[in-house]
Image 1 (cartoon, one colour):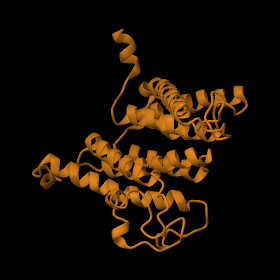
Image 2 (image 1 turned 30 degrees about the vertical axis):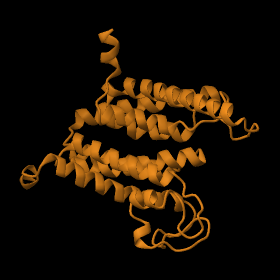
Image 3 (image 1 turned 180 degrees about the vertical axis):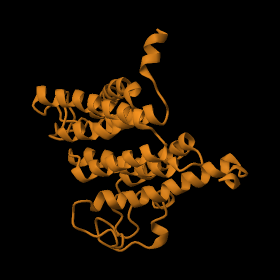
Length: 272
């Protein structure tokens, strides 16, 4: 570990960021093939023409930019999701490294980040959080507790926080009969609440709704702006105030702000 301390910090950040890009590229494959029965060992191919892709067409970010977001063989658009997932994963890996440093905690945070990216994107596209992903996040949370050297008191603290977070979202799910929030979000709140502890639960819950409001209003404004420019026909896929919106992305963003950036909403309120 001491040898890493001799390396320039910019070099470490660069290596971590590039590593995150590679992992993000792999996560794209996982997200696309998850629950489809397709093996992760299969070679990558164009989703439109089915042509197998060469190694130089799979370089994270670079290949997408060089190809200008199109398949080299059939010119079909490559979903921008691939680029965004790579950049998101790289950014979060770097943030996790800043938070964890050169310790055993950082690899656990990287694993957690990778799982949460999968949950976030999968929920956006399918409006569901598979139980196997919630279990994987929960196991990682337990592993995080072990490597941080937490004691029994912190275990109790985390357990109470998990119950509070999941209980709050569970109450919303119950009162709305599943219209306001999905039960997958209720289950996901257990490991996330456990990791932020009692002191971070209020921030986790509050930020999840703030983030949700900002993103939703932003999407509505952008959609209205685009509609004003092109005047497209009303579509069933258009976002409205009554649209079903995945909540997991908001919960995950709030969790990462609390855990990695140590955002504390309570101190904000006290400051006012």
